[in-house]
Amino acid sequence: MNSAFLEISGRQVGKTHDLCAAALEHCERGGIAIVVTAPGMMDNIKQQAPHAHAVAIPYGLHTNEELLERIAVLSRVRWFFDEFDWYPDVPVIPGAYYCTTPKFVRRANADPAGDTLLTLAQLLGGPTRQRACPAQIGEHYPPHEHPTLMHGVYQEGQS
Image (tube, rainbow, N blue to C red; front, side, top):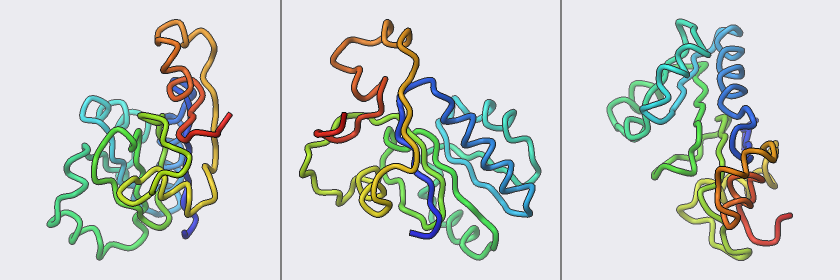
C-alpha cells in the first residue's frame, strides 16, 4: 500500500490531534486533505486543521458516489479517517491516514474481508503506530474493555 499510515491505539493518546497535524502538513505542502470524522467532531477538526484546503466531512458522506466521483479527479488529495473502526463502509485507500481505538478484539484467525482495520493491518504488516492511554483513563471503563480502549489491542494474541 502506497505510504498509508495506520494507528491503532488506546483512548486519549492524541490520535485525532496527530491526524489533524498530518492533514495540516499535507495542506501546507500544497495538498488537499479530506478528514472523515464523527459529526460531533467536525468543529474540533476544523479548529485543529484551519486550512483552506482541509475539508472535514462526517461519516456517511464518505460513501456518497457523486462526491467520490468529484474528488477522484482531483490531484494531491489525501484522505484522513478518524476513529474509523467505529463506522461501516470505510474504504481502503492507498496513501490514506487511518487512526482509531479498536471497537472490539478480533479472533486471531479472523478473515479480514469486510474489516477495514484487519485489512489495513494485514496490508501494512501491522499498525504504523500503537500507543497505550494513561492509566488513570482506565478508571472510566470496565476492566473487560481495557485491552481495546486502553491499549489498542485489536486481535487476540497481541499483548
